[in-house]
Image (tube, rainbow, N blue to C red; front, side, top):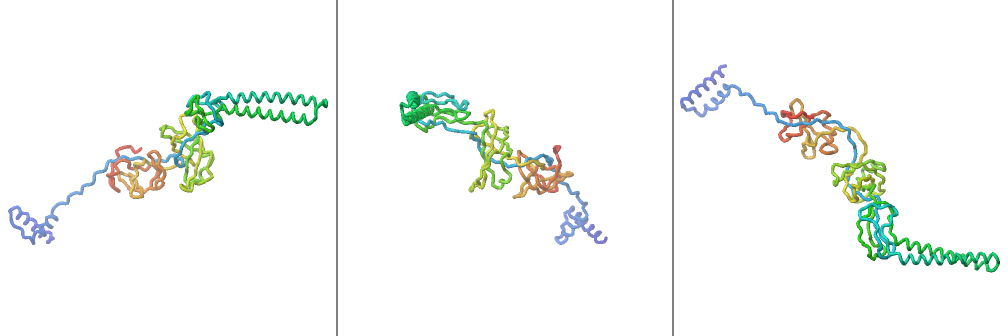
Length: 362
């Protein structure tokens, strides 16, 4: 008590001296300062203002497990029309880019020579048939030998073969569609002389289409014939097409350690075209998963964190994430369904700091 009273008196004297302009010795200044501090009333500590944030709830939803890949569309069947014999184009009987039927004649070459050869072969065949019938009748009456009849029969068979050969040559002058599809753009015109094997026009069957894509070899046990998939195409934004895997390559690519899969996709509206780039989502199974907006993630190095809001306080929590889809991220560990996570204002939030939620957190 005496010490406190003494310090108070000294402080009062110092204050009075300062007011009167009296010099305070240097050795007395620390004591005076300490006394003044002890005598001054305590000031209240100001609290940090809460940070305004937006939150979103962690939700549990059905989650289809699968694998994303990229692939290319290709025709179900595709062929380049080429002549088997050389000749001059007599007529073109299709329109470019239009559908054609199986067996429809597309291009005809000048067939005047093979048609004449066929007529000659048929005339020779008719003569051989007449000789054979006469030989049979004469041999039955004993006028000719069996050998003469056999020679006549052999001549008949030769002429029959000659007719078949001439007919085949004539048929090759017409190029027909081997399957139904769409005729492509031709590179020849009527009157052109074309050589054997020369490219004339492509033919594509595009309903259904095939899609080729690769998956890492680690998924070999999870993929197989009959697997369902979904296609998204940059050329048709917002559209999805279902597909079905129908073949798995028996070989693993040694360079990329991947497996080639082939699927079919319906194309009744003909909007899909061979060569299009496709994003493939391969479906394995479906279960439930916890998801939150990707905006809730706060990465630090290789670790992901979120800020969970509870009773007006932000709590930093480490999480393990899974797949990302369309702005959502699967959260495997670290949070529970219904937890409110900060999605806006993360830059100002600190662990344990107060926050003010400005939305409903749905």
